[in-house]
Length: 73
Image (cartoon, rainbow, N blue to C red; front, side, top):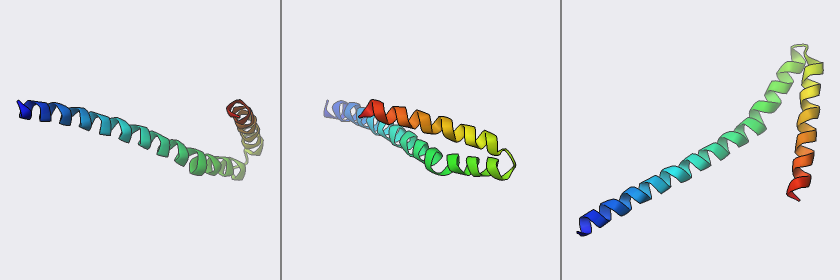
């Protein structure tokens, strides 16, 4: 009886650990994309001659982040 209880609780624990790991990985991925990849893409666009496209994307991202910060305050 204790073995069945132990196995059941262990399965619940493993699923909870997997759920937390997925949430943490998603958070780390979002940070990596926003801090590393997004500026590199904008610099690459500017260096490739698409300066106006990079500037438009930068302005749109700035407006979105401005309003997001207002909403969270």
